Image 1 (cartoon, helix red, strand yellow):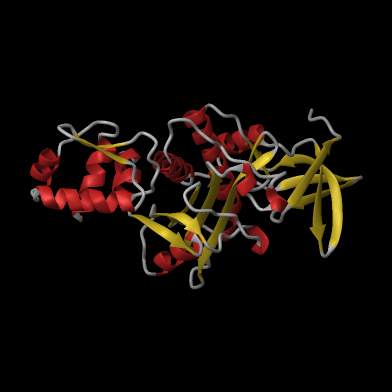
Image 2 (cartoon, rainbow, N blue to C red):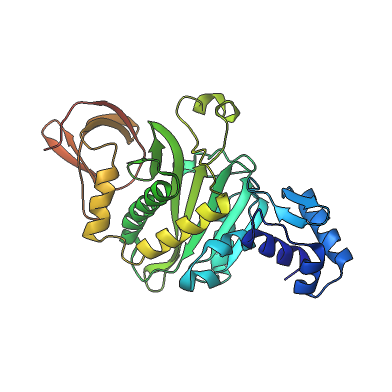
Length: 326
């Protein structure tokens, strides 16, 4: 580990507490000059490090730069040894994570980036990913299952994110089937689950779970077409490093048994589509119906007049509530 990495690890562990340059030098077995040089480089990278004469260096509470050391600090138990890759910029964390998975990256690997130049959503749509204001992360899973398990894992991921947001911020969010998280009727998070298949066994070699969560993106910073439908969390006193660690732990735990009755019931409780008129496109034709039920495997049962339709994938839009759940 470099001197820079060692210093940010110590400062993260002692956030807002001053540590003298000599103390850091002794701790890391380097010179005071090496400490000063590393701190100067960290400041240049954007870390809010205060330096006070006769007191030393301290990491400001508002500092919110992503780092492997900052994420690992908040991981617990077995997850603490997970591989963590943090990038300044990538085209897409899912694309980057796929490359790592193909190269053999282990279950539980976490990829995070300060920004994405080609953030991806479902059906080829893009995900707005400006620098330093959101969480853009991917998790590599090595499940022992079939392709049919992707839908429950996506649902379980959504449940995990809702849990973390409530626990860390006190905010109540809802899930729009199958993979979007909403706060007060505006989208704050999208989930993209992609599989790498093992064609010999017919099973899944790896799953890549991509998560884009708007944290501090100002409303006017969103593209014009998103300003009425997108929003950010703006949590108080919670860093993105901590949120990434909490989300990773929650999702990895839930992914061990994603389709359990308890998880799917929780998913239904958070749903903002049940009982509402929804619209979707099928073979180029717009269809509509009332979202009636979410099945045990995460599919959406829709009532279209006297016909019941089962949706297992795709994008829906939600409009006025026309049907009350019973």
